[in-house]
Length: 94
Length: 457
Image 1: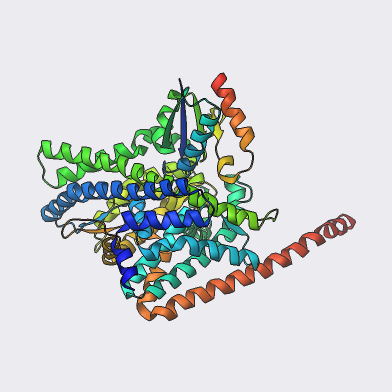
Image 2: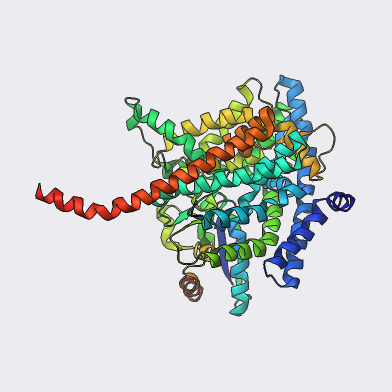
């Protein structure tokens, strides 16, 4: 089981959109049984980001964490979605 | 008319599912999905109503006891933006903000008056908010609609204005935040920055936001924030240990549960907002436009997070000491990032400037929030939220935004003329910006020539 965190600035708005899309994608890929999804806001999670295997964020993250966080904005703008999903897959298999 | 009245009397938890279902069908969503969307929104409303009930039942009496003990005037509970959004969309008037928003955006794009293509349909609720307040004030449905339209015009103007700074500071290319809660702050920050630049000594001050964030990390957790506020208010209310601890877990619970309920609303609205975004996108493909998104995208910036954490205690302090303020900051303490996230680019990430300007802004905002309290409470009742007896509620952040003051104030003074006047000014600015824009384009073409002549010299 991989823990996947999806976060945004509020834990309400954009992260809900991204969570719904990722959920549908996981189902299509038949991966939904391998992943537990968490949805939250950045200010609640900053202290415990290392508890997750994969992190997708629609809001900015501090520079020190940038390497471990996947940018979720493509799912909002519709540009670069495939590359983003590839990154998630890579982390899942890694 | 009686059918319409019957429909409105169904209440938000029934009326909105029907409206959302119809919107979704019109926008081409499959019936099954549209039905589920509508239902999810209705369930979100019911959940939110329960949480607001918990909030007013727990914090209400405590705030009252605190008032009795110390003579504080803080008897208005700040319920926070999630509930404010729900209240704003929870009336027939408010729910029309979404189709109006789409229509205004498409018309402005077709006439070239804006470059902002908004796909963040959810945040039209801010316009529904001012519309609902004006409606509560004047009981004039048409004026409420007109207010929504003028507010929409304003946010597209702001969307165009701030796009360049968003790209420069946050690095989001071709993205803007036509977000009526945060974009107005940009215009507040401008004069502040001009002033700060001219204060000797002060203009060189800076601090490291990441260090502050590390030190204050746990207080940024909204649930912890809720618990601490519960303890402090319990003590001030003269509660015993048992009661204080119970209150603190209740306030913590509200902070955690309220966003969960609103995220149900969001989940239900997502297919509608996506379909709506696609309608706009399909109509204007390949044009050089700014995509309008939720300013939540910028809230994670270290300066925004750290400055917000510092402003939280300042806000509570101001609420207590400012004479005449009746708003007890609570729900929107977690929303402060939105109030300042578009000040930060103007201050180029300077946290000291952000904290000072943000605190002054919210200090004035407390008065606006106090002033709109009766209207806000009426609007909540119109959206059939149950708040028990003699409770008054308001929203700190959307109350604090200066546009709320302008819209409601002018509507109160001169009703239609006031809103019409704002509309006229915004339209003129939109038109003049278009002219400036087309001039700029010709300048850009001429630039290479200037460079060449520069070398000659």
